[in-house]
Image (cartoon, rainbow, N blue to C red; front, top):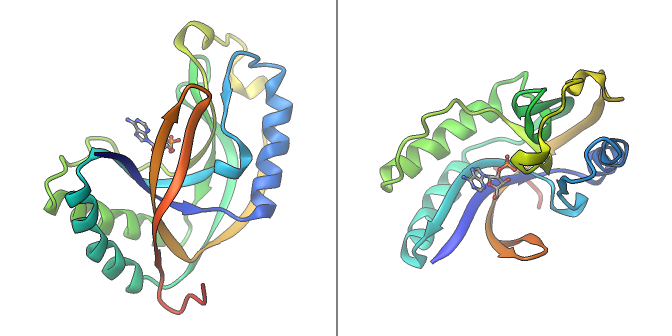
Length: 190
Ligand code: 2AM
């Protein structure tokens, strides 16, 4: 069994901007677990603990979906929180998908996963880049996230050129993400 998810990587420029935002927020959320900048990614589908056979069976479908997807550009901006600004458990930066290419890709991945027996997602796809996670007991933030220095934050844009299947290895120091397979988009040179 492996704990797996499908994601898009970001680029170093966006990563650096997000790292700077994390540094600014760290004073306000000293008890949060911050995602190491090198591990920040855009999750397309969390697969959970899956058998090696299912992990292998999914890959031809992911390869087919990716090879039928032209590269597209996404912008990372506007901070937000799940479940709310006043009780943030996850702080993130949102993704602007103006061409709807990301939504289309996520829809194809979701359909393929359902075909392989995954239960359909009961929540809408809300693309984001997670910056930190906050335990419930530390998540009350009466001022709301709007009060943090970041309001009109823009991390810049990045090109989506490939889908990556990651294994998430849980360690006491935090999860480590290990790429298991890469599925290039069509016309991608990588
Ligand atoms: P995130 O995109 O909000 O950070 C690996 O754990 C990735 O899968 C994370 O990026 C995480 O969310 C996402 N994910 C989605 N649902 C999850 C769940 N139930 N448990 C752990 N991770 C989940």
